[in-house]
Image (tube, one colour):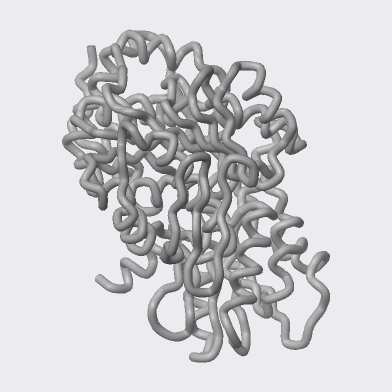
Length: 429
């Protein structure tokens, strides 16, 4: 028996070496078998969140409100930008290397000769850590789809599907109906199943009905209304009035906030939250890389919009920001995304493109992106297209050219935003 790693970086390197990180192995039989050998069970309520866009924001709002209300909260969210520990939050703090290593050891001992992907192994480890941390509630973000995602070996007490749009077509199918069916796979018989997509796919509704889930639909079971100052939530048995807007900026955040409040309404007997908890939680919530506007000039915006639905939201947010002379884009994308759709959604506001390669075999090259921009965005005066080897170089170039009255939007893959975050962090040290 070879000795096991004793540090988190060594563990992560080992798991990556066993299974290519790019490999996605759909199916839950292996994960479920290891979970049962680990005797993994949550002694607290579990809220599970899936969706094409908005799931990270919804999870962050739930965490913020529940922490404000004084509960011990676990949050599993992904991917990470700079440190793996970002994926596991216990009571608002990142899990320590030591806590994660201890849980990796448990998974390894239970695994036997069962092969697990990087995602499956780390998901089981983080869920084990949360199940054994004395939490009042666990919030689990689904990685890909829902039905066959490793997180779905747990039965959630409340499930949320935020939005259903086209993404990951190789794995989930190319229509909203196919993808809606995959995401509905996190619903459970007799349990609240919340969907905040204003136009839910019929396949999602049909599946919820078929298994006897307690389906909550936006506009039917819960809703929101607002003016410029504040907004109100209305649910089945509960109203929340005079709420402040969430500190997460952007057009879809009230849909996400409403889904979070519907989940809290469904759990009101187990995890009661007061009006002030909700107000404070929404005002103080933070989530990196979701229309994150950095202080200083030129204005820099970080956003992990990497599909047309998210890019349309980002474009709308840019339009609401007031005047900027020129907009520079630092953009990199995975190959399997609808890159044409993303560029088309963003082309209204972008004058100068700084396109970048990314450190992943799944990434599109900067040259491929340049050809697409050339084909899709109408020619405009002074438009430039430049290509770079990595996000740091692309960002440095944009910063060197932008004036105080311009803005730089860094968007696309998590790798794009993470690359710029890392470069900024290094520049500060």
